[in-house]
Length: 68
Image (cartoon, rainbow, N blue to C red; front, top):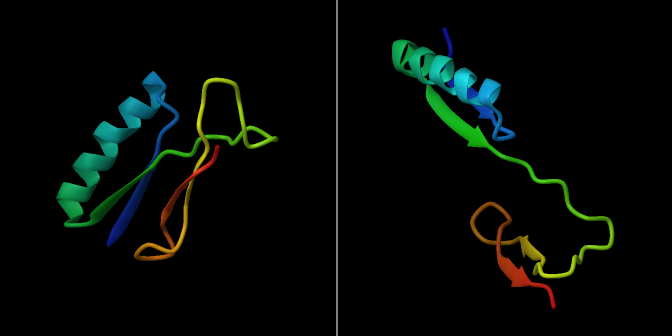
């Protein structure tokens, strides 16, 4: 029935519980399981103590380029 399953996480306990279900369902169905974690970027692109990393162009449009 399912060929692909996406599990998105925010690091919460509820997301962890959903992973258990997603893994079981993927195993049952023989489906691929894709994991997604999105982090909100700070508006200015820079925050004190953090380097901005952009991924583009490598593979499917991803490369690394560190902001200063």
